[in-house]
Length: 224
Image (cartoon, rainbow, N blue to C red; front, side, top):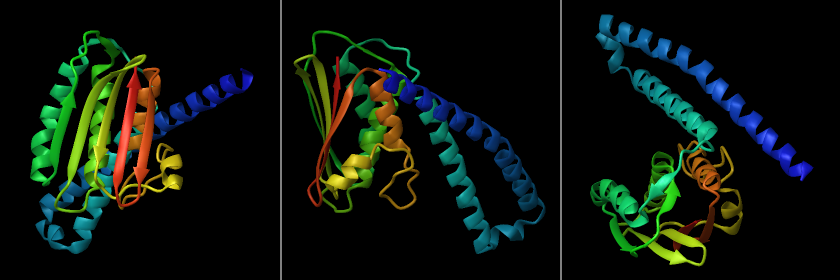
């Protein structure tokens, strides 16, 4: 019990440090960006340099990283309300369908009617689901991409599964995929799935992965 309390305290302190660090870095980054925009206004020729594009890309990456650091540090703070699971999931998926179609990925859904409400933080759970769908879409590198989302009742509540036919993961990758700053994608921050795991844990839920290299992955979220 003492070990669990100590671990929880260390985790809380780590998240507080991340939050403070991202806040302190955000201000000078915003100032640098403003000054660069002023320079570009006075000297438009700067924008034609290859180094300028690289500089802008790196600033955008830093902003994205800071946003994800903030998401991670606040992922455990939730405000649950009673939600109809099928209606909620249908709304989330309808917003993603067009994006996936544009990427050439088929979205297939199997949503069971659930007669009882589930208590969710609508904003945080939406973020967790979109992180998983984005992760699934980024794992697909062939023209016959498919993502299957299912909702069903289980023994103690509901199960939401997100299955893809992407590149899949090794057992070693599965064991570390939820760790902060661990990524297996070029240009990834390694925080998206860590945020997702924190959100599911904050809901007293569980997320389980089945994956095989070359065959794709299935993420199952259990909530009650």
